[in-house]
Image (tube, rainbow, N blue to C red; front, side, top):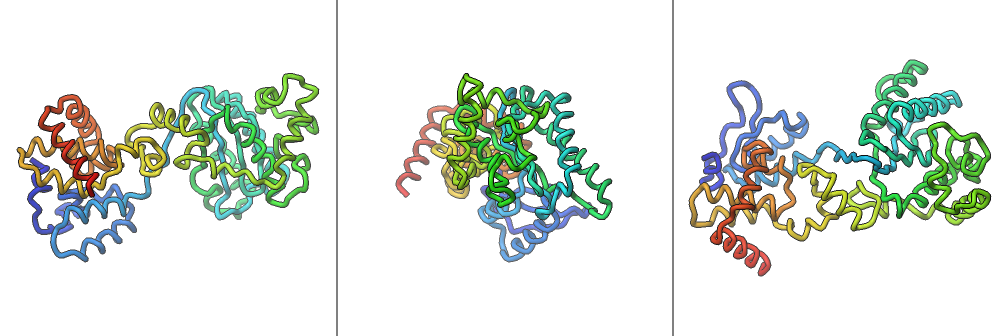
Length: 380
């Protein structure tokens, strides 16, 4: 059994392999370094050389050290609301003249036709932009790919001296609880030029949707004014006055969406956060950052090292140990399926199936072991 090396640690092996690919021993198992960047591998190799004997617990800690650069969580579903922001590389300007702003708005019109997006508010600053979007179809990634790639191509063609990347990495987005934060978020977006000191009043910045809400400028085709306006009043004559009053209630720009964001991905209440995590976040994407804000933390707050120590000490057959190890790591730690798969040396799908079977078929003896572990942990 591959798991045998967890319970019978051997001296640390040579980190090289016949094929020339670097191999790490994580938790007693081989892991190809293609999972990591070269710089992280170099650092990890230096750390491994600091210990003279193989230590599975040190390997677990090392795994977390060299696997921090996880891909962003992708959450898309029909009629989702998003706060989207993208910034120029090194905070450099994205829009150097009026024609740049106009072209980007043209791309938004094209994106609206192509992807059926609904924009409730926007603001194009000089070096970044903000949107409050609704996606009737689960296609935010396609929308942002279309916008940023086409604008970057336009920008580099127009300014050939601006070599390299135009945008700073991936765009940032948050799922928004529309019935709770839509008004505050739109006000925050419209007040960005005021906060940056570019204008004294939000209607003076022509590259935002605020002027359209007050009737100072024509509405862009991609912009939907009705949904937000109707939240102020059903009377169209009162809407503009109420929107202006609400906006000027926070001209000091005191409200910050970051202060109301859970897990850095959801702008909403605790109940909304749990609903999104439960229904739209894949298990392998349940990062420590998300779990730290989630109710899952109640059941997933044990140190993986203590679980390994406990399972290794059990007087039971190896197959049972493997089953219990998978169950404990999945049920009582913050580890994702991918992280557990690297420890157990199985595919994530195999770990998921093993966990499901273990959870459904635990016998009385296994449940007793779980209760014993929890009781001992609580005493510490």
